[in-house]
Image 1 (cartoon, rainbow, N blue to C red):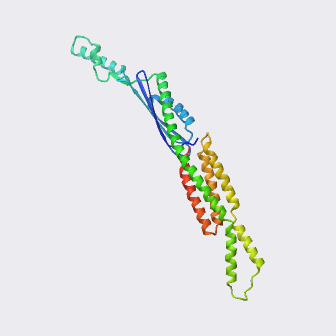
Image 2 (tube, rainbow, N blue to C red):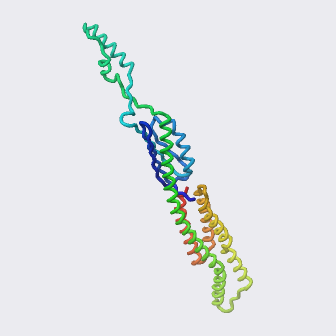
Amino acid sequence: MIKSMTGYGKGEADRGDISLTVEIKSVNHRYGDVTVKLPRTLMALESEVRKQVSARLKRGRIDVYINLEFASEADKIPVLNRTLAQHYLQLLEGMERTFGLSGGLSVQLLASQKDVILLKEAEPAVDEVRFCLESALEKALAAVEKMRLAEGEATCADMRERLVMLDSLLGRAASRAPVVPAEWRQKLEERLARLEKGVEWEPQRLAQELAVFADRCDISEELSRFRSHLEQFGELFEAAEPVGRQMDFLLQELNRETNTMGSKSSDVELTRQVVAIKAELEKIREQVQNIE
C-alpha cells in the first residue's frame, strides 16, 4: 500500500510518578533520517528508539521528541553536600571556641546553611521508563503510520487518474505517428509539382528521402517502452514494501522516452502530445517526491 512520507503522531503513557510523551513528525526526504531528542536521563535509550522508528518508517526525515515529567515534586530529591557541611561544621565549632560560646550545634542549624542540602534531579526507575516509552512510542508510530497511509491513498488516487490521462495521450501520439511520413510525402510531392516545367526529379531519390525521414521520425520503440514502464508503475500501487525510489526510477525512464519522442517529432500535433505527456509526468513526479 502506498504511504506518504508526511505525518504526525503523539503518544502518552503514565506509570508511578512518571509521565512520558512521544511526538513524531516526518516529512519527505530522499533517505531515511531519524533524529531523536530526549532528556539527558534517557540518553541510554536513544539508539533503541531510533532502531524501532527506523524499522517502522523506512523513508523520510523523522524527528522524534520525547518528554519525561514527574508527578508533583517527585523529580527532585534532597541530597547532602557533605563537603560543604563539613566546612560549615568546622567553622561553627571554631567560632564557639574563639568567642567562648556555648549551647552546642544542632542538625537544624547546620542544615539551614546555604547549599548544605541540595535538590538533585531524580533518576527514574528504568523499568517504569521503559514501559512508558514502549507504550507511548507505539501509539505515536501508529498515529504517524495512519496519517501517512491516508495521505498515501489520496496521492495514489491522484496518480491513477494521471496514468489514465497518460495512456490516453500516448494513444493519440501512437495514432498520429504513422500519419506523419505520409503527410510529409504529400507535401513534398506538392512542392515538386509546383516547380517550373523542365525541372526533373527522380522518383527513386524521393523514395529514399521518404524512407530516411520515416526512419528518423519512427517512435514505435519509444512508445512500446513507455507503455511497458507505465504498466510497471501501475503495478507498484499494490506493493507491500516502500516503492518511492522505484517510482522515481521509472519516472526517469518515462521522461527519457518522452524526450526521445520529442526530439524525433517534426509534427506540430505530435509535439503537442509529447508536451502534454511531459506535463503529466512532472505532476506525477511531484507526488512521488512524497512517497515512502
